Image (cartoon, rainbow, N blue to C red; front, side):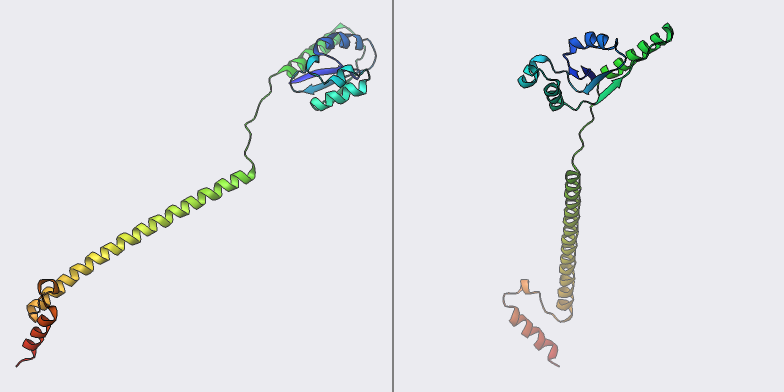
Length: 188
């Protein structure tokens, strides 16, 4: 969440902020810098920022940890105690808001991954459809073959009754059987 990191341009440790803020409030104008992110203790700060005495080096180190928008606070002398209480209440509300837990959103996959997944699913569906059509065609072909076989058997039976020509499978020499059948039908 939000946290105060500097008062009057001076980067401070979290435990030093209340005292510095109290001292700065005695002046007519002061600045407070806030940061979003985790608390960085003095031991975790880069050595160059900790050892440098200038506020520029400290500010550069603070910016390298996270982006810190500055907020300028200008106190005004309260006209009465009620205005002072209102200011303190407002400060307490802001502090609560700053300390509120941050909401983490689920990362969204890149648009390329989404498009790639859609394409893969579309190809899978097309492949399933092609397989279904091949299966239907195969079943239809088998049905036609069975029907043709039945028709052939019927035709062979009719020829055997009408002409006396037996089926090829039942005769040892089909050509001789054909000649014999033709000779019988052509004789007067």
